[in-house]
Length: 147
Image 1: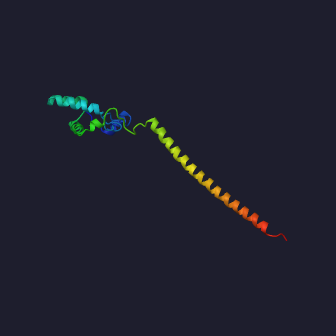
Image 2: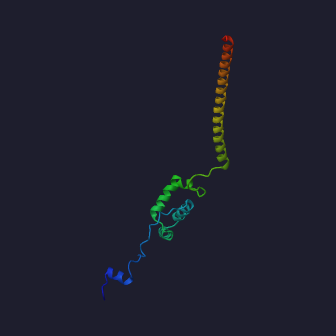
Image 3: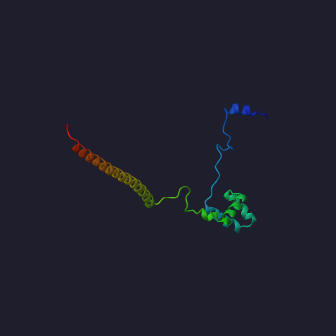
């Protein structure tokens, strides 16, 4: 029997090959739906010791997960994780979105209207001032004798 080193084996097989035992990248932690957790907990609690082990092997679970799920169930966290709830931002009612858009538009238009009213007020005051100056200049030119 001949002993082969790892380098000799690589030379014979044509270089580096992927090791089938090592995954290419680690898997992210598994996430379980609330309904699944509740179903497994109910089934687990009805079984004897041998049945519990068989269930854990069949589902690929650990007793630590079962303990954690029990704590979550007892705290009511599983009810809060209901199956009808999706992660992320809650959906916005189209009517509420339209109302918010219209409120912003009304605020913008009210601001423009207030500015326009102020401009009209200033123009009125300016017109009155210029009218008064024109009248004073007309009366002063009437009083001055021509030479």
